[in-house]
Length: 197
Image (cartoon, rainbow, N blue to C red):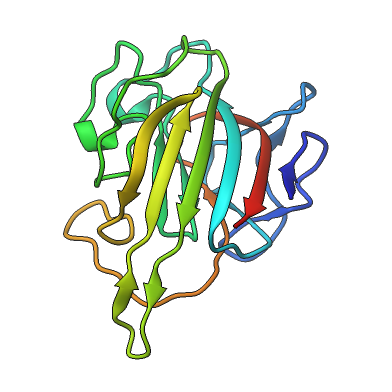
């Protein structure tokens, strides 16, 4: 399923109110996170469970900010489980918040970023958690991530949903959208497709 081919936002909406996407559609077939009050994240119109996801991204060539304030975004599967996007080149941050981390849970096995301003690829294989009749976790979610062809997350078993502070805790859920985060950084995306597993 092609989620973004560079021509329109037909597969995406604003998660706040399902309104049209306010990010910038670029002439080169990419899209840029748009900054400003009320712009927010974007998410797919479709809901997904187990997937293989391909996505390409880059941070602006002009370096602005440092730490978590440089080229920061995130790919959040089922609106709950995040793979971090960040310009980490000569830019240190906390280890489970660096580029390629399963945010706040798993440090990447290698640093595989290209130069700032060049295109990165993520290929993500995600299996959703399985819940029992009473909401108990029968099987935890897992994530495998290749960053520019390098294995950086190897079938990692998620502790629970992404959380900034505190211990993650699963709550029963079904299929849900894939979300791209607006973290007030002008991250650029292109060539997004997904295969349901």
